[in-house]
Image (cartoon, rainbow, N blue to C red; front, side):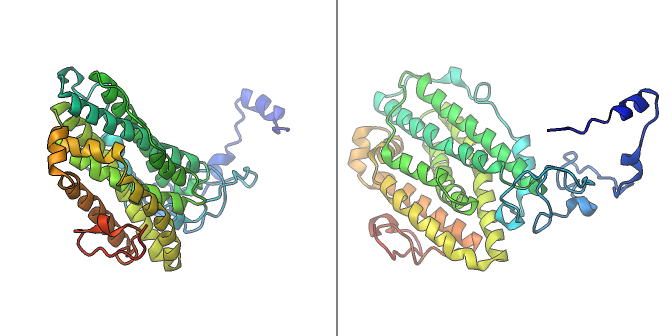
Length: 362
């Protein structure tokens, strides 16, 4: 392939004979100045003039910065997500700024030196939960990474936010793997049920499907687990881990919820598609609620020992179950998708969840 090297220009520029066409032939909004806010120069601060206008449909498929003058012979990058509603959320600029300002280190910001021996049952429970979390968190990096190169560059703020999510989830996988190995317990057991849900996300045929399954359902459940973990942590070390992971996960869930809302507001006809995606996801989630490798470690941490968890029975996990399902329904409501009349969960799981009804029992 010829690169069209202009040898004559090399000779002219060597003599100081510049072309300056790039300076003379421009539609740049000269003189428009972005003003920093109190926290510095944010993405919202530079969303000014035509530079801040994100097209509903990208006019071209290039990596040229939105608002720049684009040469007619730039190559087509082959992006497949070219409609703003497919990936956008109204909170994405603010979420990006929060993400970059709240990065933390799993090496330095966790007081690993303060770990002390725990009751063996509690240590085993903590390590099993850490194993599951190190397993599921990486899918929330793999999924956006799979789709990032397909998203049009005109939606650069959404792409930048998804990049922060990839880094967040790599750090979550790191911190839970470290916790499993840091106190003498080691990694626990991975199950087929969990892997099936992760496969469902990665095999999603559209960004809509994968985002609904991951951001709204999967990460929402993990966020509830993080909140519970911060309250049930057997030591300040685990408490710090869960608190830091929780602040990251909350951003991802907030993006997914507002992305679905943005999508539905612009095309209500896609609601049935999202219902179908969540139908499939809930069927697997129902099995996760009956998976010992997930249910029992959580119950043991809540009760403080195997004996106490056995004495409490279902009560040890019921509060968390109701919280998880209740939070999920609230997210769907906020996004504009009413799941209350068509949950694909058995009666035993939605018992006690306000406003929940079952349509199809699995």
